[in-house]
Length: 345
Picture 1 (cartoon, rainbow, N blue to C red):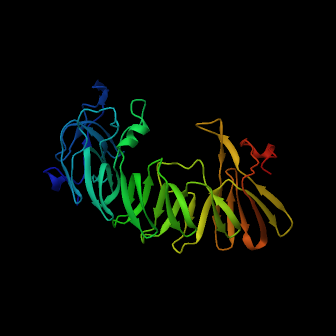
Picture 2 (picture 1 turned 120 degrees about the vertical axis):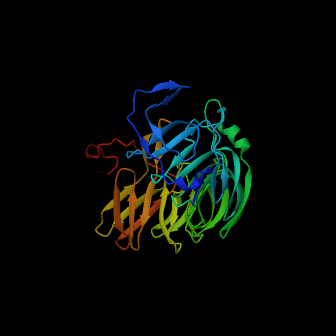
């Protein structure tokens, strides 16, 4: 059970009563004077938000507090913010009142199933078990760059059943029982691991089943993977680098390929003679004017669903012939009105 301060036994929830009046500025923060918060010993709450039922959802602090958990004692952030500190929630809570996350005043070591790691941010499941930890939690902005944050990151040694490596990480996520759920790599890091599809270079990270086998991984470069419809390059140039729970290459618990993303050209010929060409489309980009939308494939026992970002089509593999061409893409801007566009036909 997670305990807060000396008044541990009362920390089962937070009641908020009263009607909100017009807020006024207090150190550039909104402060509602009519709200009464029973904090079970938590001191120095400056701003907070609540669930619809009035339960405390998250808050910031200006005073020292000590939160005791089965992973150790933690001091939530309360000091004067520097250029690195995120000006967001310091504490967040499940609706039941149990601690959900803590932004720490100082980097604090936490013991996990794979070793001891320092953390500036920790999150918890509602039963009090560790959900995730992040060694660094700096705010990337015009005042603090990713390069400066990266200079603070250190490499850690990891040993898994699919490979050993040393790498900087953004964070680790866990199952309630303590096993690693996913590992998020630092954006510049690349590792090589054994997967059911062979040895591949990985960026962003990977996700594991609770038995430690690989559920998904994010290829760092286009990697040829044998699929039920032929060899396809697995790769997504636009994969998000901040979370490794959803990746371009996925497997089931037996190691069977279940999905991948690709920029390859896929030609399908049905048994009735009908032909279909599927190619990556374009969409407005954030960093560039346009960016490619990867084709996503989902594999069943004798089926494949091919989604080009415009439509998803199911094919029975035994009734079709597939040809894969990598590298030479025919690109077209996604118009949003398929009834008037022949480019996707």
